[in-house]
Image (cartoon, rainbow, N blue to C red):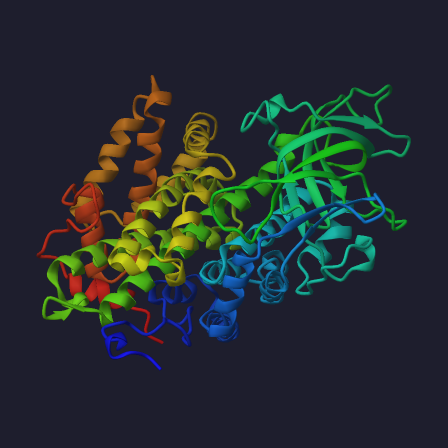
Length: 553
């Protein structure tokens, strides 16, 4: 029996038992804006079902279990035979199976699939971000495999399946498969042209034997992997001219034997504890070429672009989770004679956080819609907008989650609140799939080599011209900076940041409530904000902004 001093008061109820999708007004609006009306009813039903599952006590408990019981590497069996398997807690498999069955790898197989899947990915990240890695890799493998129509025909139905099968067996005997990726090596990092893994052609056309290592291999429990290796020039012309090439490496071969895929160790990394990243060795590993020899970078760029967009969506999901928890806490917690939510200074902080979250969601969903459209104009927009969004949104994730945790005070510093898990995860997407400098340089590359990309971007932001004088001024300033690209590499981060902010401002001016667009343009484009959150002009409609972000079902 509790003592008389242990009466619990002034503690908010847990944020459980609600529809994570339906309570996110910005996300719901984006889906309704970008999806064909004929698809809306079905999408609403599917996303609400996923949202209710995401907000349930059961799935939140699975997320805790998956992170409290991290994966374990089993290199050998009891007799000394190589296993190279990663063992996961059952909660991990339940969550991953739920993500697959919800269609988070099936975007390419249905109309409006990218918008629907992007919204689901934002929702699902708020449950447990770790299983987003294999879901993302599997989703993103499709455009890379399409460089080889025969491979795509064989693998795409399994990649886009809504069936999760965890057992290791030949892919042809599975209804659904997961993909991982291995590009990074010790000596090269993002400079994948420095890769030393070699590929020796075998007798059968298109097949090779790999020797080498990968410093980071994502999702090592997967059924197959896309990797880069240096193909040796072959006699004759059947195998091509050699050079950096993309390969498909299955874990289990068609005869049921294990491919050589030696997991040396799992990485002890910052972020979630549920997922596994590994160092792997290839030694006579069977592989099949994807695309042409020497064109590995071009082949895998489709995968990289898709995973970069997932970095944006994942960061948007983390920010939304953090802001929802902060607003929820402050709606119940009392201090200094009233609810924290009603205190002007706290309201300012929450509103500022809500702006960042809504801008990230709105931008991510717009880019997903561009994938569904698929026109030349939209593809050109993606070429410059994806690296800009990946650069900026992922970098904003960490300060947002840290500030949101601070809104909970000491409670936010305790593991049971869930906030530390969000904070630890928050830097991941900025590092993964090319850190900040890589994204900024990619934006410069698009500016110099693909003028249609800049034209598509300017047409997109131009649709909002005249609606807000601060946005108009920001567009003008950006054009001035673009007029002279001498010494642009040293300014690449500044340019990339402006590309992202101007695009976010234009989208919010067009689509968000006036109070949200006004506050964003004032603080992010007009200079009327602070270096830290909570310095918005007090004259803005802060109460309405916070109320819009409140997670009410």
